[in-house]
Image 1 (spheres, rainbow, N blue to C red):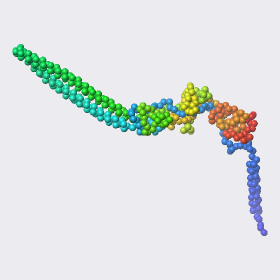
Image 2: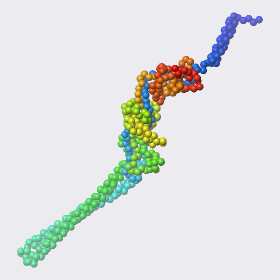
Image 3: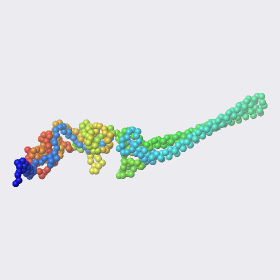
Image 4: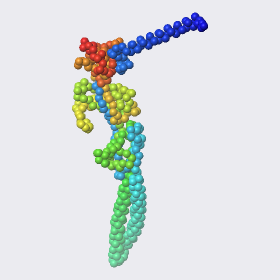
Length: 427
């Protein structure tokens, strides 16, 4: 006969009661799931946002690109047969005096050797002309001195005419006359030789100067085959249209460049502006001096705060297709950044008005009920459509009146859910 102790009986009773309680709790949970209201939506089913209170900035948004207000163009030197052999990387930062482009110097070096040889020959010809002039001058001086001596002796003999016979005196006078004629002829010849020598020396010196100028020209061209940056900034290479407009591409290594053509430009990063397109409907609310917030596509995490510098008085036509006409708004960035480059795309938000102490919600939280704006407000029983008054609207957020700060609003509408279309929006 089995004997059960009282302690074991109490343990069995406790286990039985616990099992019954667990079964009851499970049944209650199943009942709650089965009879849960359809309109009891929570943040687990739809994305929500919180209405916030604060200053609301009414903005006009313009898309555009960065442009430099001032830049320096780099042009090819006036040197024939230019070919690019080295270039600084595009969009790389350079300082004043840094090399930017180098052209092939072999042609200029070959011309320099030829011109230097011609210069050496011209210098030798000049030295030879000067030496020959000096020799001829000395010879003329020596001959003139001899003729002067002969004429002086003839003059002495002619002075003895009083003590000599008439015939002898006449002969001495004739000899003196011939000696003086020879002296005058030699002096004239000496002057001719001197003038001729000066002409030859001058011609040789002209040839030397011409050869020297050509050498200096070639040396200048050699110096110009390396172009250095005239100031600090970034290198932006221009388009090469030598193959036509349809095949235009930026200049690259190996391209032939015609003298005087614009090859690159170095914009001043301190003068960067965002040039945006403003629609005519927004032009009347924009004026110079308004605050702007600039966001660039490459750096969406950073916002530049600046000023609206100016707005064009007339529209400008774009070269896009289809062509459009719009105003141009120029906004400063307020601060520099070494990462900025021309033609970076971005957005500028121009602050045209301010609403202090306003309630704002995301623009996705505004829906329409019976032609009126409503928000889907989260309550204890789920989402309820609540009518609001729109005070101002931006692309991302809307200032409203009719709800309190901190309220939870849905960001997605569910037209199948009739609970979100109650009379809350019709009151």
